[in-house]
Amino acid sequence: MRRARLATESRKSLPVARRKPIGTQRRMVEMVSEKTCLKCGSSEPDVRFRAGRRVCRPCTNQQEQDRVAKKPGGKKAWNQRRYQRDRAGHLRRATAAALALRRDVIGHYGGICVCCGETELRFLTIDHIYEDGAVCRRETNTRGGTRYYYWVKANGYPDFLRVLCYNCNLATYRNGGICPHEEERLKLVA
Image (cartoon, rainbow, N blue to C red; front, side, top):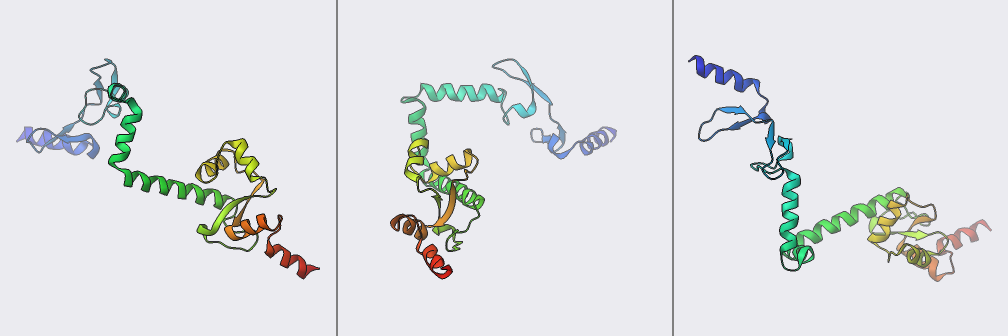
């Protein structure tokens, strides 16, 4: 009776994350706070080991890299096989990341067309104020799209960019640098 009470008392005093079942018994015992890696021999805290492993994470990662490098074609072929296994999932994640980046960049510049006031994200794009977009993309070695949005964010959102809707952007290009909305406003003022 005394023995059962001690086991129960010590179990109650442990935090839930520090308890684990042993074998078929339902009583809980304290987890080991440090383990010794079988590969490198270093003593590391439990968090440096994956669940149920006796090799630390750095050694496990190195083993994985060595295993992948030995396969035919190396890491590139391994990545291609991994991509083909979950192509739909990869494309879904990449699309979501690109949309989040685009939303972030356009939101930084106000999220509204400076010419006509359009706010629908699907219609908005980044425009170069000085009409030098091709030169800028050549210098930055980006073709536009997601790569360019990454460049804009990495370079601290440059001041020579603004948000326009696609209609205003194309009309500005075809109309010699002035959007038809601006022409109408200038006629009303004059």
